[in-house]
Length: 410
Image 1 (cartoon, rainbow, N blue to C red):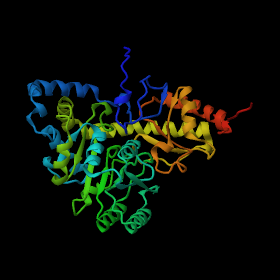
Image 2: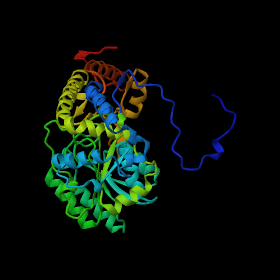
Image 3: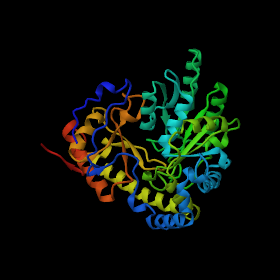
């Protein structure tokens, strides 16, 4: 469809850059939070959909299934049990809000707490979606460096002290403590306790993003920061995107009522998708606890394939620390590699990657880093895609000098 009408003069200032047309996934796609299609529990979801629709499908005629604006009650009841069992969080159904994926959770928290010119503290390497939203809101982000146990508390204490000296009180400290994105680290309980101490000392709440916390290789995780808090200064979000399927778009927020009531007033979509909530609640109660270990086992084998392929194709030119879980590997290439340029060259060859600067507050530090999602491609696609990526790296940047353990000659 073509149009001669010019809408451009009607666009208000401050809109995001226009999106490109969708052209499909790359042949070798290592981007996004996509999961393993073979691990979607399809038969059980079909059964759950039939059961849920047969039992109460006619309630779809009422907004929110007549369960109120916070979401389908049986799903919230499941989450109360799950969060207590897995994360140590003690909450009630009234403390939970079902949202359309964790991205809506981010938007609701941000729109409730932030105004242009505010300051927030984030991990130096963090979720691209969070950074993009903060930039659009005109919020100042202070990045705190990480180590192999997550956000460094010495660096956080220093940042808080500097801001306090300038008369700035951050609106929140945003952290992904359990299977950090993109690094895959897990913050130990002792560090979580120190984070809570600093939060209380400076009067700054914690925004805990636990979206990847189900996917821990060992099956054991520290208690959620929310569970350890004594003063209710933690907002906790989670999602079914990584544990069941991202396209379902079902996430949740755990927050005190004074914050929850404000977020409800901002959630103007008349409720997140009811059918998805009905199906999930029906599926999760009998199946969730057995599904997740099977999923993480399959993901772990794909991580092994990716690490083996990188070692074979790149040798010492690709540095990485084995993540504690999740679906991402954070990779450091030699300093001369600009992953923003590598992204373009690789995409032209059918390989999509996430360049590091898009996932960091320190563009220089992350210039030669990239994030690879290993959940979506098959084992064969992982091997083939890494070989193509190594070939592109050698042609564009001269690394690796060896590929597939064979010296490459001009």
